[in-house]
Length: 213
Image 1 (cartoon, one colour):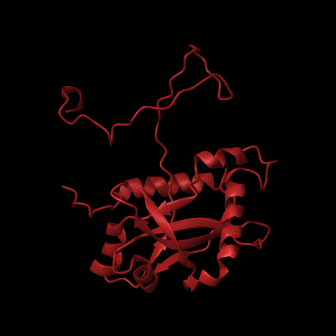
Image 2 (tube, one colour):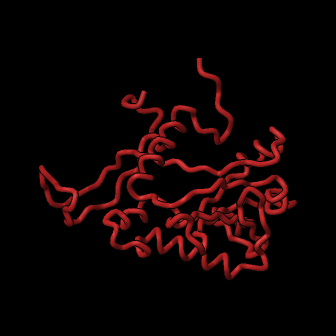
């Protein structure tokens, strides 16, 4: 029997699949240089604070290219729960750049915003619009990640690590698309209406159904 997973832990085979998919996208839509993105324990403690706020990581692009490539940058801020819902709001400062050594960029917020905007232009396919695959990035890559409390608590408090690395993976899952017009041989560039996909099982399933036993 496989050992039980820790909370928020990705099953090893699934993690391998995500990394493989991401590496494939490097040959297609992901043309950025990617340095090591490190979150240090002291940065985590500063951002989490006494209220155990969550950490949100925004993606940006360095202002200078590296060997002709745009270079990914990452910035971490503290996010607090607004009211009783699931909305988390960012504190403007402090903001840290997540390099091998985390750097407080609180005095450079406009520079941070500029780099984030550059990434979003890349994500929207505007920085290299001549690339036919550039327009697909907006459907693959997010603007930011809101990390859970549990994964960082596990790494920094339970395992007592002094730093954690932020990496990337891609989950490729089949979605259902509903069309009002029937076409048995639908082409990729078909521009007819397509409606939102249904909730996927897993995770949204009827565990009591005889069809899901």
